[in-house]
Image (cartoon, rainbow, N blue to C red; front, side, top):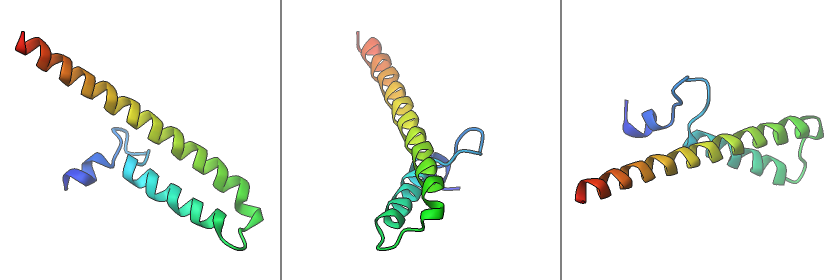
Length: 79
């Protein structure tokens, strides 16, 4: 398994990784921006997009926390 593949899986395996979530969001956006979006699927697609956005936000927040921890550890080692 490549690093990208392992980074794209959640620890539980049920939630898409950041890259997959962004790709799916882009697909949903293309569908919604199309000339004739399927109104019957609109609410479902918007709800899915909201879920994917929350996943991406959570992953970005977690990555930021991990970076802060690494930087703090490096700074404490330097002192």
